[in-house]
Image 1 (cartoon, rainbow, N blue to C red):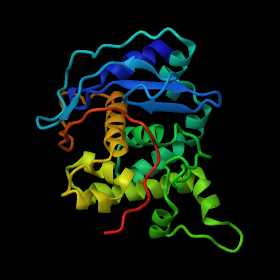
Image 2: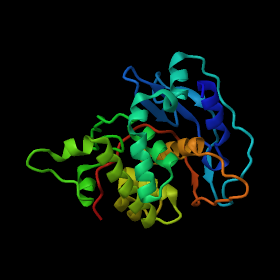
Image 3: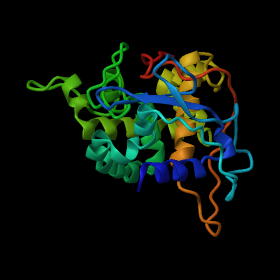
Length: 258
């Protein structure tokens, strides 16, 4: 599929429950960076959305195609075609399929989360210590049985794409079960820790990074998710948000302690 066709297909599935601007660029290493605002001069707008999220009525089967913003620069073209041509994505997509099936999580949700967390950079390490594709904190990995041994430190194990994706997906599954029907809270907890969400009264914590992270993941997810056939209606988890601003960072915050 050509880059233009990829963009049209992606925009065609963006539903009104995830209206948000999408900005981004691809750096010299081929790593994609996504945000909901122009973080700096490198970011360019390639999708114009609205400002709110609401899935109270489910995802409509047929919606007008949202407006694409023409950005004729080379960097934007590379961004649009990122999932089509990215070697980093191609190298790990079979791990995404495996984890998606194992934990019963949409492949496209994992795809969107990893794109936001690391841009599919398996070597990414955040200033807060989150590691790899899904930016897993070492303490979180230990909860799921990933630990250092005499030969391999924990950080190196987490840098392995299969281990990282499997661990991050298990944690996301836990959060989806902890906040049933509230995808936005599960994503907020993935970024800020479940303790922060619980202390906020089971609402998205008032952290700009977390609020903007949730917006970015949901928008990318809605763009990547194929439309549901009319005969097989599916109602997604309800998501309701009215959020200002845009994504300004990526990577998990340190695990919060209740």
